[in-house]
Length: 201
Image 1 (cartoon, rainbow, N blue to C red):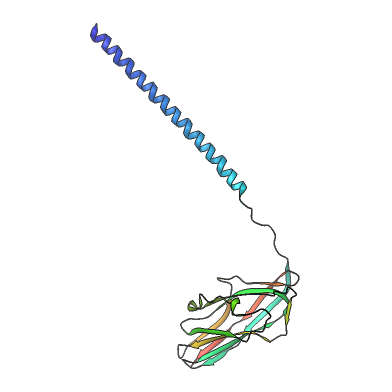
Image 2 (image 1 turned 30 degrees about the vertical axis):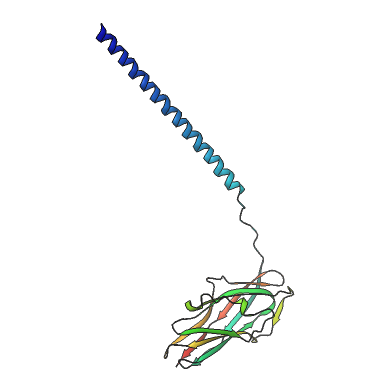
């Protein structure tokens, strides 16, 4: 009788323990579900609060700015300057792009002969010139639009010629600074270019 009673007590204790575990599991599962739901609501609210990208696209003009860079020849060790010229530079408010060259052939030395209002050395990014990259960003601070006669110099870039018997293009590209030109009508206009070549004798 005592054995049977002890067995029943143990059995009841086991049953009670299982029910307690099941209850705890259900409670934890419910809490996890509630937490996940709250997280989804929070995430949705955060997405809603984020500023949405602008859908505005500036109008485009059929005009094209053409930039050309002079060819030059120099001896190794000499300083050589090449000039950037414009055609179709009509009532422009701003322009930006990147000038690129081969840094194994040419070493950047400086800039001169600025032919645009408000254009100074401050408009040129020189932190990557050792990689052969120089971003350019110019704006007409008067916001009246600038016109330059075809073929007139905009500015000149000077290099030290390094590698004898080699040559390097000096060209306009869209990285890291993207190509963008804006006219007085606040329209985007195209940009076409002709690279120059510096030959080291």
